[in-house]
Image (cartoon, rainbow over all chains, first blue to last red; front, side, top):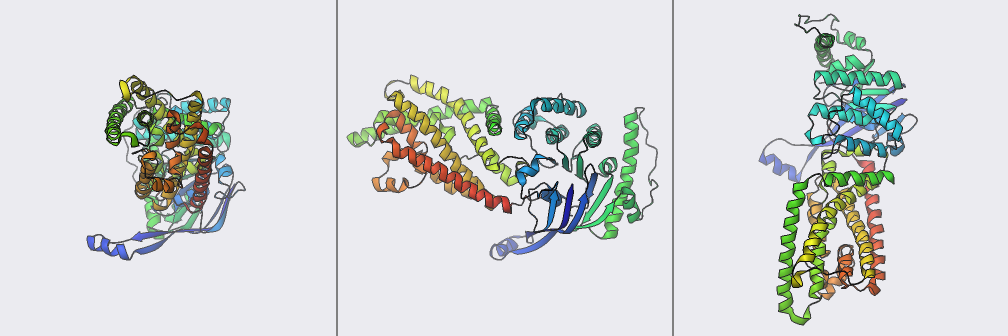
Length: 293
Length: 267
């Protein structure tokens, strides 16, 4: 489904120190630094896989996603998605992918969410029946019925994110890129989004690539983890491989009893939260060990 | 095509979302238009017979300008598109299986038409009810009215194509301020928004006529009042079409460069 071979990308970044003197100096001579966002990145991902793409801040995660979704051209290397080169056959390529950029919005700010959805329906030429069926499904799973008629600007971050996820799926993409999709979500929404992604994968064989700093997301969704640091792939395997690499024991460190409620959902959330804390420790240890911070 | 109509529709809907903004803008425009009419009345009285346009044509020109202001408002630009370029929202635009150029073009046209439709009815109504010489007249003939509509559409095309060209240039500078001030500011002057073009000196006007600016609002508003006779319209319409095609081509050319080099910054 996806192959990336020896992909490199670097950016030129202007740098200067603070202070008026430095500002004046930079007016005449500017110091640039070449940042190697990706250095010789290669991997393959098969159809129906759910891959967590993780790494510290500035490791090159978003750059990879941008290349895969066709909005960034790499300096060198090859990359094919479903037999197509994303940045060369952009319009053909993007028909089959769905993207959520957690930090940006694809919904129209001033008008009700449902209007944005209708627009997406036209953009992707989704038939009326398919659209209605999908919308119904998404509305139910992501609990959107209350918020669909609200203008985007009046939604909370979490409500908006749920709509963003739904918006990316209206055209039933075969490939879904999620760039930090759970930013700002409350516990219930997070669980809903995670469940939903798993269901999508199970029922439609959707390939999912997820970048996030929320290790619970990774634990809940990803079967395979790719770790990137300083632009290079450092590890490609299961979560267990990650733990082994970090040299941190799998046994929960902080297994203090949290006074839990009686509902099942809360209980499962508690255990997830506990192992999530551990996984954060695992990641921190691994980042330090690999010296990629 | 249906896709682009939908862009038009959605932008139209968001244009109509804010009612109060429309009401306040309307008041401003009525007062501004009235002031302009009075200023030109003073000019007309001072100049006597040497006036390059008939006073009634000037009044009509002013009211049409106020009524359809949103169609040609170059200096406010299209903020949502500048915002997309500046804050990286363009990454979502690039993830759509449509031509970004056409998508934005229809979006801008939709936005402008929404605002213009909202404003033109009350402005035209008021202008038609004003007393004496301040009243806006009917079109000189049915032919002139039909040609007014045709040239108006073409003029909107030219204006939006120019804006799109500027939008595309903004990809290179990140901040849209410079381009907007220089290009769109001069557009305002040269297309006859401040002073109708017949008031310009002959030689100066000849130079201006080599640019796309006089083929925007200048044409339809003067056709309506008969200041630009229907018989002379052939070459003017041809030039409108020429500029529309040329500006769209230029915009697309720049876009092709942008598409290759674009870097959406930040995570």
